[in-house]
Length: 273
Length: 296
Image 1 (cartoon, chains in turn yellow, purple):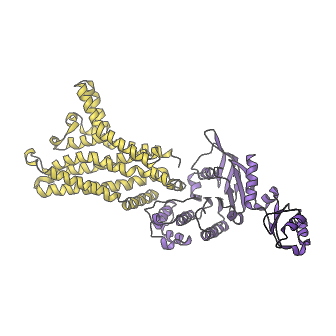
Image 2: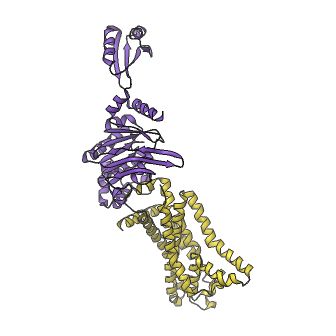
């Protein structure tokens, strides 16, 4: 465990010096502020507290931003070490590859949680300051926080897997951006197109719910919006996914980090520096 | 034996990189691994470290499989162009490596001091020169008094003074019983600094002996360089049946048995000769002799 923590400590210093901590915190804070400013107008009419509305908008933000930040931090983790030539030295040390990946994972997850905490915290303060009823939404915010970390953990694992597979930082960067586009942006559009084409057939009733919760980002969105009071504020596919029980989505967001991390470790095990 | 190699063979596709290489390194012994670029030196070292697996043959590090946890505990490595994360300071980098070996991170300062980096310990490695990075590499190789030290062209990029300091540290380690295997291009520097020489040529081991024995086996000719009096070079060349290389120098070539007789001939010329130099075959000559034999 000491070796895992040593790796995590070293990676954290590197991320601090490379300004990754500053960049991810700034990104989350900036977008959260924009959202809470934009979301402050229509509250009264909906009749829910302001923090719940903020959580609903933060959910839509996190679906895009958390995977992006996680992938940007992780794509260089192994490919960068191969390119710099530092990997072959560290692999001659009495440390298991799993320990190295776990150390990086802990450091990057810590940075992600700082960024998410800062972003959501500021949005929450803004909501509570203007609406005394907003404290009702605290559990929803807490749920959003830990599920965001699970979503981030999934994409950190995927990022390490791609990094080990690509072996070059340039190729890894291209692959993670492509993956982000496919999983986060195009996936929903594709499902939407399929539903329209299917027009209420077997695809919509049988396969569509599974395809939706099979994607970690969609599962995250469904879970957070389904259990929150602010489903009315939901957009996109979630309306169509109302039939999916929240517990299925929860299982998906719990299993994905495990799958992604094991996958990353397995790919990394086969890397020859 | 600290390190035993036998019949080690490695192929990439249909290209044989190492062909049945076998030798030992005992505790406290310093063995130089010589060979052209692409002769298989780095691959052999990576096999010993467990970074690459061999197709055939056996490698044992203190009786352990290469790359096993316990073998890695006892083995240190330094590559040519040692590289580290540029954002970390030398001190932070060494503290990390110490913790990976289960050692006290506070030893970092004294290790950096030992390789002459005490003053730069708190500067980022990104600001270091190539020689300073190589010293960081040396410092990490000293962690935990390794029983086996694998050095892949460790002195490339070091200035002559740093090289000498580097070999002083190596001598100390060897005296403590560390087995050292190092590869180098700088043949003259391993000449005085190693106990034995292994020469690889296109993946085949063509020599494995002390320098003195290799010299004898090769029985390469000795060069005698005679400086004649001004204007007498032609006369000297004719009398000694040698070759005139410029206005005053006459080159003679002989084997070791003829050497004394030839020197007698030269001194018999008396005032015609100014000076004479005896040039034994250099490590370069011996090295190319054995390398060529491997290719034939």
